[in-house]
Length: 196
Image (cartoon, rainbow, N blue to C red; front, side):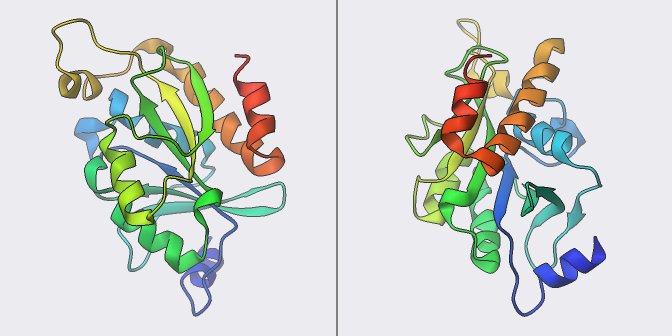
């Protein structure tokens, strides 16, 4: 791990893929719906996330199908995720089409997982920030459904409330989606994941 980070943040930093989990830092938000992207990163990690020098993210290295994948969480709050992620993408030379973002999705039923490239942010402030700082919408997305709140429940209250017990299989599926995208491509991942 030390050699990886030394290489990554030496004179010629490189990575084949960035996988970004969206969420809010701190124990207060750890188990909330808005943090299912963080949970997906945790599922993929074999080692603890470590701070990366000079950029407000924590990360860990993973090899998938011989490709160097950097798993990261922004150290900022959700609404400001784009700035450190874009800085990391620039530093590692990873283009938008090789950035996979795991995030909560109000417009999917709870526990459904779907993959796509680009598209609108649908009011998701973390995605808006990424689009702003990356300068494109053409990054890949693993959307983890959280459903919509009951009538009368404000969306901020809903997304910042705790996940239900049934979320774990969805997190497993999201992690599987990442592996499939890196190994076989988006279309293959969609064919397999969207049947679940």
